[in-house]
Length: 150
Image 1 (cartoon, rainbow, N blue to C red):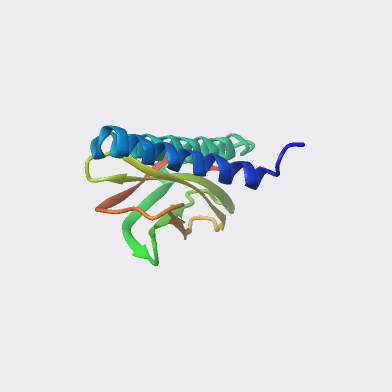
Image 2 (spheres, one colour; image 1 turned 90 degrees about the vertical axis):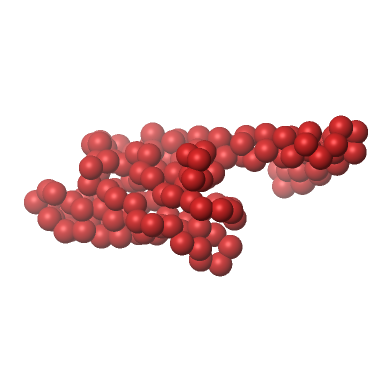
């Protein structure tokens, strides 16, 4: 009988932490830091992939990257946030699906967020908040990776 998904996830996380500990003990701190960085990179790529899958589900979307702007980032509790504003140039109400990336000052991808801004009035603007999936450290910027109007 297979254990429930959460139990498998806990076991996998425990195994990863154990591997990090063993790696750190066997090869020193640099190798442990590198291994931890690889795990974070893999997790960040998985989140980005999930955001893209959500974008792929948007029907009849039109590229609207020019309609959407990312504000400056700030910290809210333990998460990084940015105000995302969609400005609808149409004469009818529109909804927006947006992929926002958070990057460090070196341009490295830290996190990816999927955001919807629904019911943006004709010739009007409306904002939403992109909130990181995890705690981010250091200086960060928010960028619009993709935006669809539908």
